[in-house]
Length: 116
Image (cartoon, rainbow, N blue to C red):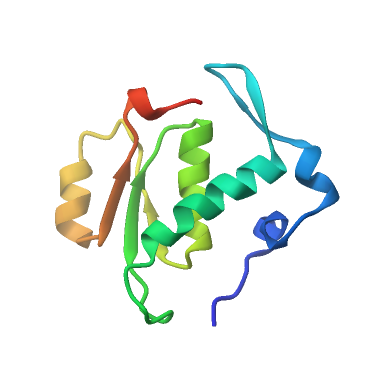
């Protein structure tokens, strides 16, 4: 059974926090509220579950920018219960990490996919 992490308690359902600002998108200067953040995380989380077995954990290598999209992608991966390996998105050694750790998923975001 997957144990929920305390810092993800806002994912447990509708809360008073839903209307409070969670992140500011630097490119559009638009605030993302906790309710919107939760919806975006829930939209992405099923993508990580490629197995019917909830005990089958994968390794996700994340090379994500410091952005709203990067945070949403990271939090959805955390919420999935899989193991994460965080790598600097500007690292020139990404191929070495992939070769060494053989992750099931390699996640990066292009500059075009950032922002709303």
